[in-house]
Amino acid sequence: MSTTRMNAGPAGEPAPLEVRIHRGAHEIGGNCVELRHGQDTLILDIGKPLTAAWDEVVPLPAAIGLDEHGTRPLGVVISHGHQDHWGLAPQLPTDIPVFIGEGAANILRAAQFWGSGVDLHEAGHLHDRVPFTLGPFTITPYLADHSAYDAFSLLVQAGGRSLFYTGDIRGHGRKAAAFERLLADPPSPVHAINMEGTSFRTADRDDGDVAMSESGNRTAAGPSLAADSDADATGLAPELASLTESEVEIQLAATLRATTGLVVVLASAQNIDRLVTVYRATLRADRDLVIDLYTADIAAATGRPSIPAVSDDWPRVHVYAPLRQRVRVKESGQFERVDRVKNRRLYPEQLRERASQLVLFGAYQSEIPNLIREGLLTDGAVVWSMWDGYLNEPSGQRLQKALKASNIQLIQHHTSGHATPTDLARLVQGLRPEVVIPIHTEAPGEYAATVGDIVQPHGDGTWWLV
Ligand SMILES: [Zn+2]
Image 1 (tube, helix red, strand yellow):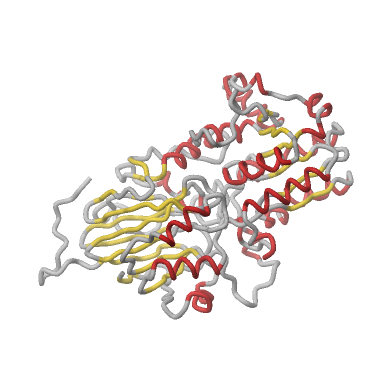
Image 2: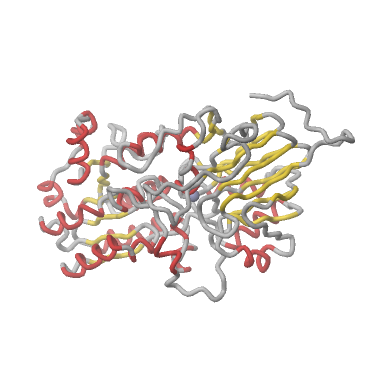
């Protein structure tokens, strides 16, 4: 796609690159950024706020051309598959092209049947360090280490100026090498960074923050299917938030070895880094991994042979289908969903026989009462491997009560999907921008203490120049 419009000012100077954040200047989630060069506009992310329920309708931001006024944006580029970055995309006029990573798009399509995805009908895919143009904008994606698979930061250049939009990023996950490569081989020049700051906290904030207990995207199927958002860093105890995925792996392996019975790891199926972490810990403890139907679909959707999946290539991966998913398959009539994993399915009698040799991973929260009732968790443990704020929600409270009544341990093994303040400071030092503009943060005023006086917060809806 291209335009022939001349983006030049009256004096022949190139038009400036202007930006406004529609949402996210002072909240975690709901990211939406609009860029303008002359008459042309481009949108980065079109997220739903974390405070909105899954089925709640949130209006599109008042960006140019998203209603009946103004020329349509040249495209919407979505950084990754968390709902607080794509959630309003289904409401976009269908003539606006959407771009996202191929793996991210396929995961969201696979998740649709299970109530936590979407078919974005994307016009094109993002590839690491492969630039593409939309009118006057040149967009270069940079693979980002994040708890969502196939996540990108986005460099956007127009009119001789360049903006680096981090999306969500960290340096302590399984793709930490991508973060280090960005620092070692950064784009240049970067005039401004629009930088996430999930891990920045206001100093006087207490742990029982209301925003935490209200966040999270719930589906009708409950949080065990739905924990695929960015809430994972908010409120995590610092000692958990700063672990690497490798450290989570080591600690989980120790828990598995110390437990004689069945272990169930409750996690977001779309957190592929965590799937790999748990698989590796499972092997360290000489157990086999058992996943649910939803997790099996997500793992397959990555299309990557290095991701554990239900196939002959992965003899130590099995399937146990929780009741809620069996009901969903039955009601849909899509029995091929169970047929294609039938050779790898385990049933309660096998979980009982092999309890000390198995680890269940994925969307099993709603299945815990059944497992307790069947006596399958005797001498076992449940591992919470998600944002701990979900434990304060009614479903989390019910889980804790049920485990306590049966004297079953609940152990936390988790780390954040978002960079520590230290790594954010390293990012700024590596990219050497003129200014840093906060986004995806509850504490824009806290950046400067770590990042320095080049921080310039802008409120939602305000245009600024790169
Ligand atoms: Zn995210």
